[in-house]
Length: 400
Image 1 (cartoon, helix red, strand yellow):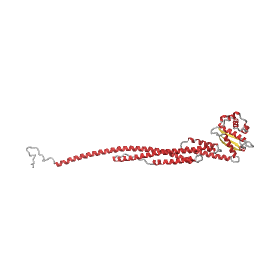
Image 2 (tube, rainbow, N blue to C red):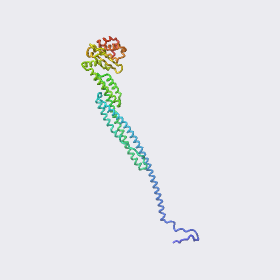
Image 3 (cartoon, one colour):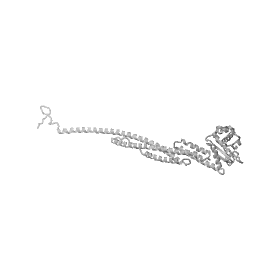
Image 4 (tube, one colour):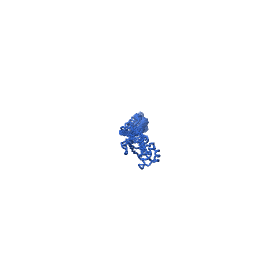
């Protein structure tokens, strides 16, 4: 045992140390606490660094996914716009086709052409179906960019899925366009063919109604003449068909009125005379009127004729004949008088061949033309107007 020392009374001064500085058992826990704190601090730094890396990675990944999504969305919108435009065009074309079919009375058009248009319209409806369905599909949209890295990862995955869906939609839209383009072309071609079938039928229709008034025939010709320039289906296409049909209706109506006026015992002879006159002047549109007295002649065995013609296109004239011409048909004198009147009518094709400034020269020309055609009876104009100059007869040979 060590004795205690009284520092205050010690003769040598100084101080006494305690038996020991610290217990070994007390020092060890303090060193472990510092190591634990250091380790926790280091772990915290590592966690923070890892979170930072995750945040950056997630953010960059989201930006890349968003860029791909935006590109896919833009492509899908462009495809949808193209498909909508093509669908609008097809709808416009089929609407006109429906109007054409509704307006078509069948008076001029060919049934097979109408059937072809109906088939093309049906095909167009089928081609438009997929496009209409695709255009109703809503396009996915992207929300605002999240903040937390786990939200960014989830959003990136969804953007990738949506981008894939948009790519698929764009591909489907692009695939729908060619069918509609082809359908539009098919309907247009069939519609134009229907219209042209009516125009092509116009000449035969005219020939089947020879007694129609000139104005009605000219209206039909004019309407038909505008068709060859038609390349598209629009409102003008329908108007062209309606115009032709209206004109054809007038051709029929005026012919019926003319035949009603010519009805009676002389009708057959009148129609033969009209056909005879037309045969003398091919290419000239002739219209005929009949009366008891014409140009102060027609009674007591006399015959009268009067012709009105127009210099402008088309070549046309109106010949008025007395009933006595039909009563004496087919006598040579009747044929000769008719030839004289046709000589006036055909002058529209040969106006530069004679002097048309006086009535005498006009009548001499018609007489010369009848003579050039071999009609020598004095009813050819010689009896009424005298014999024409040989120069007129020679010129008349060139007017056919």
